[in-house]
Image (cartoon, rainbow, N blue to C red; front, top):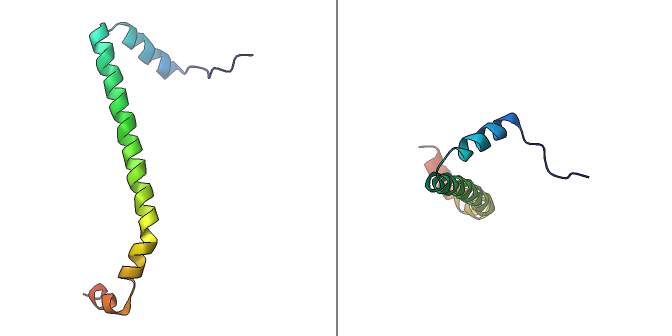
Length: 72
């Protein structure tokens, strides 16, 4: 049984384009893909850290003294 996901037409077009590149250019494409993946992972990490810190910041921000600043 084949467990490989079916390649979409968009993926096939990209693969064909990559096949026409020189090895140096393929390396650049791979570096760019790695960059995009790291960028996405960094964004997810920042969002997760923000969600985790919300409770701690709410204790600091949600208080009667701070409410005065909220009304400004």
